[in-house]
Every structure is written in C-alpha cells, then in structure tokens.
Amino acid sequence: MGKTVIITLHADAGNLFNADRPTPDPKYISLSDSNEGSTSTGNWEDYLTEVHVGQYAIWEGICLKPEDKIAGYSVSIDSINRKPEFFETRELGFRGRNGIVTAKVQSVKPEYNRYSYQIHFSIHYQCRSKCFVIDPKLIVNN
Image (cartoon, rainbow, N blue to C red; front, side, top):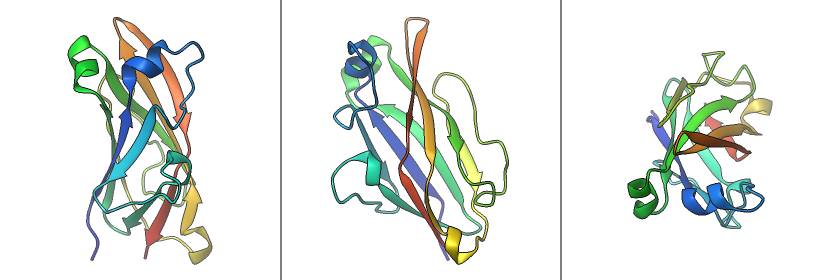
C-alpha cells in the first residue's frame, strides 16, 4: 500500500522574479518529493515522482533561500494540468499566495501510468506576481 506523496517545488524566488527574462530555468527551479523521486540530469524536466492509487499527491512551493522568504517573496502552486483519467478530481487548482494543490490518484490503464504533466506556479512579491510553467513526470503505481 502506497502513501501520500508531497511534491515540493523549490524556487530561487528572488533571482527568478528579478531576472531580465524570467523563465523557469533549472538553475532557478528544482523539485523533491517524499517518495524519493529522481532525475537523471538533476533538472526538473525529467524529474519522476511515483504516486500510488487511492492515495493523495500534494504539491507545494517554497522559497529555496530563507532570505527570499524573509524579504517577502512567496511561491504558490496555482494549478496542475494533467490527463483527466489520472486523478479523481477534474479541477486541480488554488489561486493565491502559498497555494497548495491536492489530488487523489485513481487507477489508470497501463499505457497511461507514466506521463508528463504541468505545474503552473507563481512567485509573489510586493503585490506583484509572475507566473511560470514546468512539466516534470509522474508514474502511477497500480
């Protein structure tokens, strides 16, 4: 029996927010999870998280550097784009500061058990925000 998996997006919030051309470059963004997810390159682009049928996946965003949080930056997970058959809920999103998204994993056909999905997130600072998208991978353990 699996467990709930927490997927954490770590953002170098200050540098990403203030970059001349802010893009979710792997030098500003990394992922980790509570189920020993991995990446062969060290980049979020091929980060693979294993989730379990009947359990929950929770996405959260945090500032990579404590000084960014102290300065007033925050990271919000705005929504998750995914195949509709992957999770029981159709709408996976919560807009706002410190947003966290939660979804219950459902059983999928073997051909759908591994896929890329999108994490839509934003960085907030002094009543302003900038939005970004990354597309790591999930695998369902039936």
